[in-house]
Length: 151
Image (cartoon, rainbow, N blue to C red):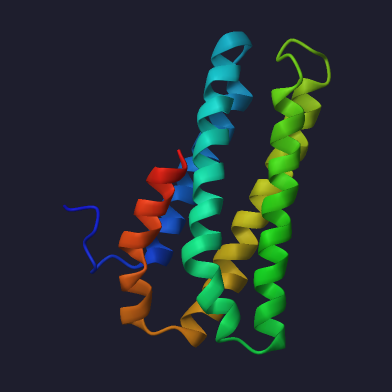
């Protein structure tokens, strides 16, 4: 399947990526040492690119077409992105062997899990309310392209 297949809904792709992130989180929790750090680096790169793509391709139209409550959902999603970026930067600066690494990762897990759950519930509902199925499908290609360029 071509990655720019317009039949794929961007929200479906976001959900698939969230499942991948949940799996990587579990792998990190089960790993140790350099393996843990390597899997974390993959998670960090993928989440960062994912957030940039959402903020560039999905969030602007959802925000601009929404009422104040819908706009607040988008603003909260962006703030949660910022919080996870900050927590990942702390992990970057902490040795995986440091006694605080796992605690810092537990906080990241909590932030990301909350964010993904809320995004799938609230943002998806809002996006489906203000964007047509065609508009959501047309965002798939640009989302993937932005994500790839952000890696």
